[in-house]
Image (tube, rainbow, N blue to C red; front, side, top):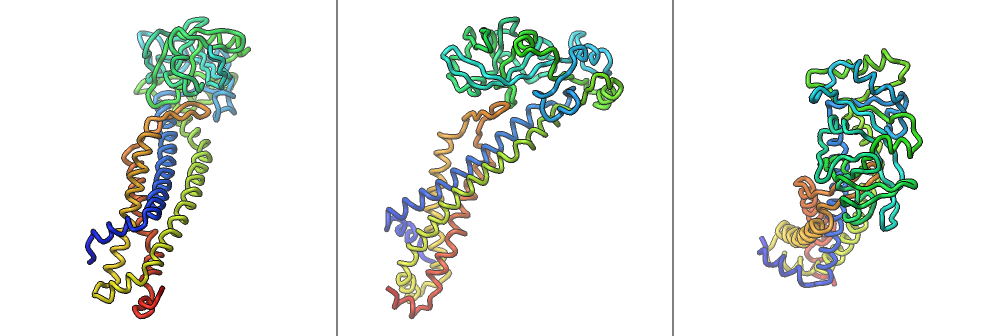
Length: 383
């Protein structure tokens, strides 16, 4: 076998080629790491947003979107007294009639962006158990409470959604009196209004949905039986976690497009790297033949070429992971119903490392074979 120092020394024979190989592999690895982090982040926030003990009552035919749903106002009180197994907290049933509305909000600095508004009463905290007040208090009329990632959804500095600041909706001004968090869920990007305020401004005389939290011993079938018995209310029941699973299916095309875009750009970088390796190895045919003539086998030369390529691609992989740490890790990405955070999990990092190894091995096979394929006399006579 050739000494490892031989492969290491060959890396620096052509600095321009080395930079091109390292840069190309870094681009490929960075793109794939970003694609995996994006898809994992979106899947994680949707899967953790729903509770298996929560059931959502929506208008029939609107099971795919709460925002399109309409539920009669009296249905909340009827459901609270008719459904068995609703969990109680200090004698109060864990049931929350809510209004969902997507509309532009304007900050004090004049920035206007779409946001997901939720009209609630205080009993919303009984069903959304992941929500906790970070600072401030629950809003009353003329006030709002914002998720601590709402500023990302609005595209403004966090100081513009701090307590005491105001947001404008329609022609009304609302003061921020609370900031809440709901780790890993879409709720953290929402803006919560007093339900009556949002109903008035959106000109609604109905709810969007009713969320019910069941006791540990309760059965989802009890809620479904209620919807069948009260056909006059025109309700459909769906588990909250199943609802967000369906939303995940809706966003699958976006995730596929992320992969396709990453694959197309990565393919360009891979083919560019192959061309570089072909040119580099083609110029070393006589060198490889000379080494064979003094006793080194084709296998030893092939391993040396793999080592040389792996060193370059793993340097690119290391560069890509460092860039990903500073550019991607912890970044919040807004989408239509919320915000998710990019995280460099072990599986994401493993994807980057495996990609770098495959680039350095599989990508080297064609040019290495072409370099070592000629017979010894032919290779020695080559220019």
